Image (cartoon, rainbow, N blue to C red):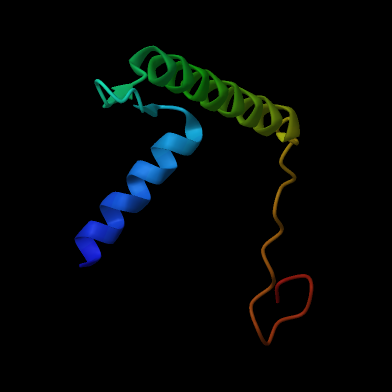
Length: 86
């Protein structure tokens, strides 16, 4: 039963986006798969995804800070000695 409901849901979604249409001609009913629309929509989605990745890469590159010069790290004096190291 779940399989049938999933199939109906998939067909409904495909019909809503325009990838599938139904021919209601009384002499010859049928189902049309709009393959060119599928190709166009898929290409548009791929292009939009590539643009989003480029924008994300550019925003990451622009947010990077140039390497700051490293300051020498002073090591703490061992416990039990004064600042001169005695």
